[in-house]
Image (tube, rainbow, N blue to C red; front, side):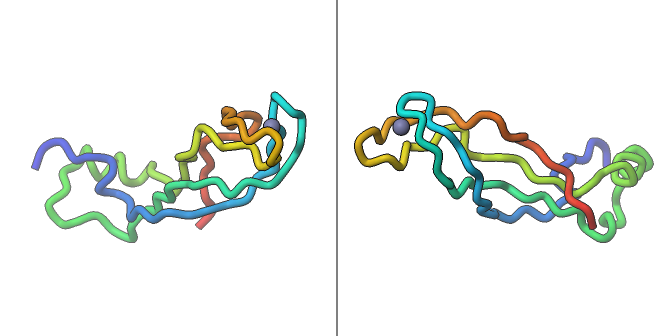
Length: 95
Ligand SMILES: [Zn+2]
C-alpha cells in the first residue's frame, strides 16, 4: 500500500449550522443555515496502512469545512445573492 488519501482518515457527514450574515446590498442582517461537511476522524486506520499513512493519521484532527459560498438575501424586497464572508470556512472539532 503506497499513497493513502487523507480522506480515508475521516467519516464524512453533512451538517447545517446557523450564522448571522449581513447583505452588502440592502444591509439587512439575518440568520442563514449554512451547509458544512464534517470530517470526523475514524478511530483507527485499516491494517494495510504504511508508516507514512500512520504518521499522517496521528496528526489528523476532526474538522469541518464550509460548503456554501453564497446565500440569497432573505429580505423579500432584495433577494439578491451575496457571498458568505466574515466567518471562518474551516474549523477543527474537539473530540
Ligand atoms: Zn439584501
